Image (cartoon, rainbow, N blue to C red; front, side):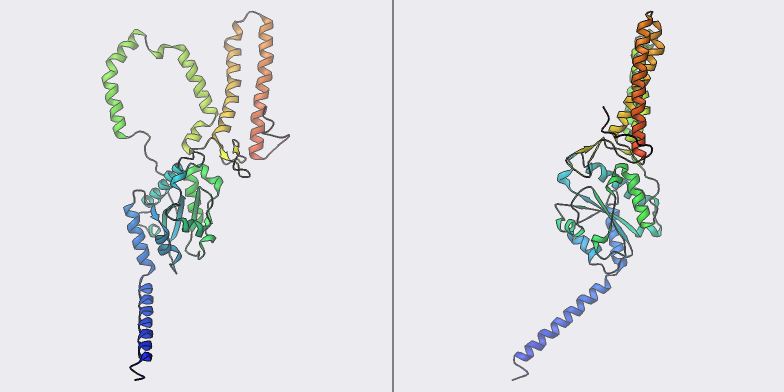
Length: 347
């Protein structure tokens, strides 16, 4: 009776528990690092840009529950509900992040580096637990999780100030942390092949009419005022750093680090410039250029000496003021030769 009673049932349950525990351990041990790498490569191949979308469950599988890893993860933290906030530039940054991922995969195809680094994104609404696990409380946010990291809060965060340089700064961050080469950032062409074909077709159709108007001297190309406006625009475009802003997709302003409710239009540091400060400097240079052009082309036709002298005095004072402000801005950004209080003295 003792063997066939409750003690027998107890031994049976203990045996079942031991067997199930052993089976789980066997399954866990059989799921090696190479299995996870293979699955990550499979998920990467299904993504257009190679960025793997993670959630709480998959993050646990590839990161937190993995006892040993041979790969690093670069994680972009996203929130779809904040895409409309222009000051965050989340959509633009996500596009740039995709470019870095696609460039890394293309430049490292069929090399050992391909399985050493994976680009991932994670969305707030889907994975709030993961955001809390990393301690993410502000966006934009990018983390590098190396194979040596055990506590995800110890992973390396990309500096907020580096986001202004978009894909290039992201690539530098990746290369500095992983010691792997991202390679050339390949951007899609501004004009697609279909658009180019349409433009060529439109040009061919309209060419007889254009030739006729050109021979008659009745086009915008024969308007001197158009060339004047275009010349001023080219000058302003050149001296304001507008091309740099377009290529780097520089924002016009940033939120103030000390007070997020305020906007910062000038960034202290020689490594970057905001759109607003480029336009400010370009406007000052253009003002000086216009004064010089007026003095050399229009003022010489004025017969009144008093008017000439008065305009030249005003032009010199305004030009001196404008150049002084540009010098102050340069000194403030680089930290050299600062005398006085600027840019609050901008008036």
